[in-house]
Image (cartoon, rainbow, N blue to C red; front, side):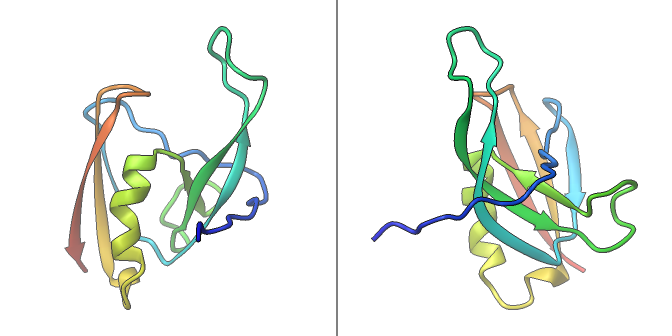
Length: 114
């Protein structure tokens, strides 16, 4: 049976990287759900409901609020979820690098113990 995901409340803080950019995250909480986006490409729908993984960061980790990122790239969600389902996931540093541009962008993930 497919998992039913509930809508996540705003504001949304979409996790975005440029091609070749790396960012390290320390994740202290997470939730999966859906968000509504408004695609900008010609001929696209006015709005679209997509899967989202909201990753919560420790206080002071991000220079501005809110204290989370909304990950919408399915390939990155797929890579992160096995680690986040493990006990003590919050004792890891998640090093994410993006290669390419959407919709064909891909990510590498390195998990480093703290």
